[in-house]
Length: 192
Image (cartoon, rainbow, N blue to C red; front, top):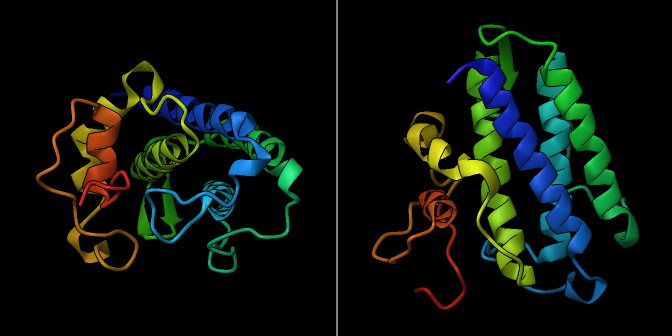
């Protein structure tokens, strides 16, 4: 996969999450999500934080001071704020080359590796949001299938228990997006 193709996947992932956020109803913001640390509101805040970290990574700025969950955005502005960040992400990342050195939140690497990590993170949390709000939970354009091909390389064992939980095993699913979510330790409520 070329860097341009990877960036298209990342862009599609961001816009998918933006559409999911826009379709989320205010009454759903307190609902639980498959990511046990978050309700829908805090998941959207985490997605905003992830977007800010992606911008910081692309711009060569430290991401250490960016909160894990952004909490200062009004409920009725969460989706619009994310969509604006998604546009900025797409524009900023296209100015980079695949081999450009970057420092992502999980450590140093290339722009390609970082874009892959952010794509995996965005698709997985998009699945969380879709499941929590009763929306279609399959990511568009085969992105999750491609993510499954490199997820193990961008989610090393050293990040398990720190940034990611252990993979979910023994749960049948035909969905590539759900398999990716399971790889990051996320599962539908009731799938124990």
